[in-house]
Image (tube, rainbow, N blue to C red; front, top):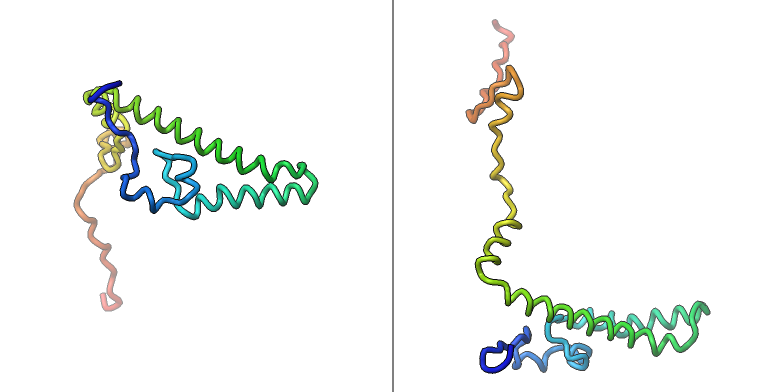
Length: 140
């Protein structure tokens, strides 16, 4: 898709771009929109995990530098995969989208129960409320 027909795929409006966390802006994320807490976990959490692993001598101290870079690469890869999925979904004709929506639409509360009346002999199914049983009075 090139030329004037090419749509803009960014999901974050331009005027809100400056309010995004620095981590998301540095990675240039367009489809994945992590909040401040998630960006903290991605960056500072990866550093903390790497320091703990290095202190436990499970990895070398290079992991303190490498692990946040690997996490950032995975977040960017996830953003690129999301871009591919959105673009391919936009190419699906509207008729196919409607058919897909009908197939995955939940049908809770629409199940028929006519099979119960003839598969269980001697059971009467009604929609009328059942009256409470009459209690015998002690005076009777």
